View 1 (cartoon, rainbow, N blue to C red):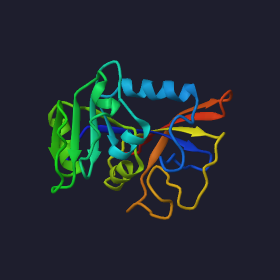
View 2: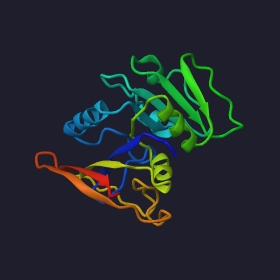
View 3: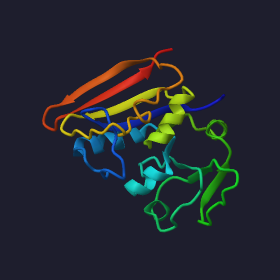
View 4: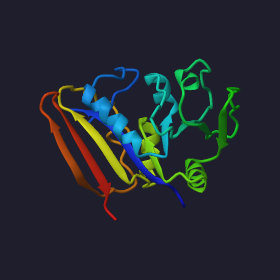
Amino acid sequence: MTRPTISINFAISADGKISSAAKRPSGWTSAADKARLKQLREGADALIVGRGTLEADRMTMAAPANPWRCIVSRSGRLDPAHPLFHSPGGPIHLLITDSEAEAPSIPGIAIHRGSLGDFLTELSAAGIRHLHCEGGGELVRELATQDLIDEIHLTWAGHTLFGGREAPTITGIPADFLPASRGYELTHFEPQPDTGECFLSYRRVP
């Protein structure tokens, strides 16, 4: 598969969990973490997010260089009033993975149908070299299952403990293993003593 380089960015709690819209809203980390999120966007040609995360966090996916703003959804159901569709930024692309789903009638959206792998090939053909994913867990799980993640950026938030046997991690429910282990090396370690957080980055081991 010809595809872009793919990076992901997540904030995780002290016990390695990610926030869930049903349990806790976004915005639970520091201002420094939010600044890092914006910094990581700067190097991307395109941003990608799952529909659930887009809606829960009311994301506009804005960045100075106006990267493509990509959404992955099984159903294709999107709220036309969502801030994304009323905010300046890069072109909006929607991947609908359910072949029977009806495309939304929202002006200005490029509609794609097929698998995630098909979409990544399309992005590469269109000149997208770096794709940056900001969630959610289901989308990252699919990327990890297919071994497509080249860089991982984490904010470890030691000030918060989510807990819960069913609370998700960045690759889904803890007991649900990937098909095989994935190898990464630590490339950045930056403690933030004032906030109780630590910035971490990993790169895929060839």
